[in-house]
Length: 268
Image 1: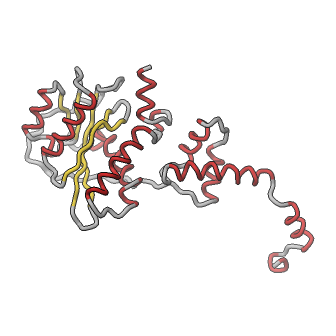
Image 2 (image 1 turned 180 degrees about the vertical axis):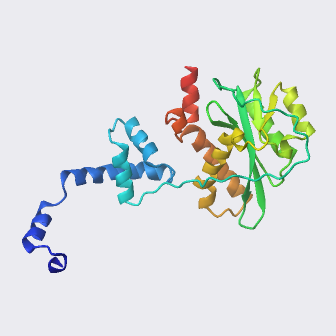
């Protein structure tokens, strides 16, 4: 092998005697710490968030070094594919305005955003997940699941959000223009709670980007990694992820802390 690679026997034996360099030994130690964080978050954290987690433990290391060590050991975080939905043409009158186009969100319970996504089970049936997020802290404050996408689904989620967070003045609820948010019962319930309704502008998909981003993360980090055999299994996964997302998962937009910790700091 030495002849094949043009290496002298003396050079090869000297290399073996030297063993690992100090930096290589340090990299091995760093890898163990990085792998612990990577496994704890089930492969959802990349080098920026892992670096932040190490800094929280008072361990100083650069992101470039973390990225290199991850790359050398094949640790690659799962990533969501960006996509744009293509809504159909509705015959409903677009009379509900978008109230958040230039809005600055400065406190909790100022703006709630909601959306519905679909999840396919292994037997080919569909489940529909509705969630409501507090835009200020990115915290998911309510969710509901059903095999029918209708006003009952969104209404159940709204009722849970109000139970969890209470009533608030000048609160706005924003969503896309899905028919489940346009039914009379839903709009009447918003008025009863004193919540102003807001909807996406026509052909402006980014108006509800926070909810779309959440669903991409959720599906990438949980749904696409398991075979969903039952509704009970799906409910368990959703419940576990909501706890993880709200109380543990760090968010770069919040300074690499969880929504719960962000709310606590803002209320101090």
